[in-house]
Image 1 (cartoon, rainbow, N blue to C red):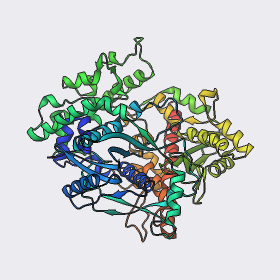
Image 2: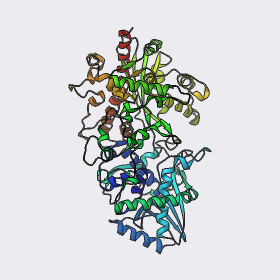
Image 3: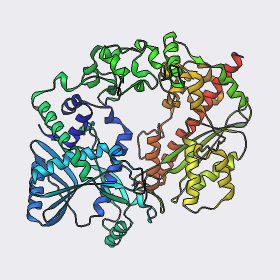
Image 4: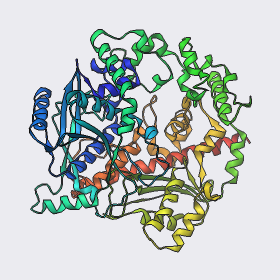
Length: 626
């Protein structure tokens, strides 16, 4: 059985996962839209990288063995050649190299990644930020040196560089993920994903068959937003470790895994092989056995994984080793800080344990005081944004933020019906300043803007900075952005009120467990207070079901001629929908665009209505408890 780079990567996080992967256990990533989006982004960057090496040859055969043979033949028969997806097999280890350059007796191994890099950042720490990628690179280097020991080998990462700005308008639209192709090899960007559940996207270059193709290729080469970084030293430093781990993983594949190869610990919380409640082929359940079903679990604790430290040992690991995995097994003395006090985090953890045990909601009377401070009208605001490795517009950097949508529910008085306003960009130019101006024109200096987490504040602060970078002149907008946003570095306090922060300080429900995201708080309140369902403002989010009432699951699918059923229910789905509106293969199809616009608008509207629902419940409680 061969050890691939993907195998090595997942085994390095937990050796037992290697066993599950080889046994084709299903994982949570199999249906993870975010992971699939990352993989597609990686393939787009890979295509971009290939186009900057126009003389490169793709090594493509129908089996691993034939691809390995052809790779070796091309390298041995040519003094100067560039190969794409060169495949090597040595000592039961197999790798597929993104770009392999041969220049006489020198081999340059180039691993293309979509991870961002900033060549202007003096504090850049590649050993920390890019550790996982450098290990990938080192594993490939081991195999390359074993295969061609007589050659001089150099190891590189090729990454999108955030210090570079594209001169090409609509660059992202030069690449189209239009269909899928049968893939004989693993999708290495998804190491814990069973390959039968994800097929490789076909990334097409828009001008591939254009008579002036070469002109566009030269433009890409001149504009190149990727940076090539040599990591010979970093790779050399970890080569021994990589070889030792490879040998251990191969031994596991040959002779099976033993208890000394792995242990259950707090890292298991994020195990990809914990798929739902299925008992068969559930790796997490196999490892944890009867401990799997203990509720409430220590993994539910707010920031529980941070209790303890590397020197003294992590407290959750200590409990797990004793098979004590109930939330109530936690000794609350461990929740105190170094000063021996319950800090803000410890207090939150204590509230969670006490009120989960009592099976009761907790609401601080201080919350009511905070609500009284709010100045009407109240503006409940939510943004949707896009960041991608390949910039959308001229003058943008890789991963520079695009703000493409906002939703706002405004309440003029405590008894007023919420008024909904929304904005969605559908124009093919940089939208951020139009985005901010439209919001400024709506709320101006009136009342109190509310957000959930500091994200909206960060976006507007980012747009304020972009005004200088892009030389955009609008004094009114600049002044408004300065007044509404908080910037701690500059000692500036803005107007936004963070409802997530209010939740952390003043509200808890056992069904939230250790989370305070709006998608956890909303169901806890909505499901336990049926009177909210009959309020006219919220009635369209009611469900006939008596057991599953999460408003996010009542989003009506928009049925269109192009899709049988489709729903945008999270930020990842919103990003993908927007990218398709702008540059997708069906971007010019008006029916498809209208369908996607409806999906985006109904999703963002619910995010701000969710804030209103929570606010309404808090206000009702303040009246009852007054």
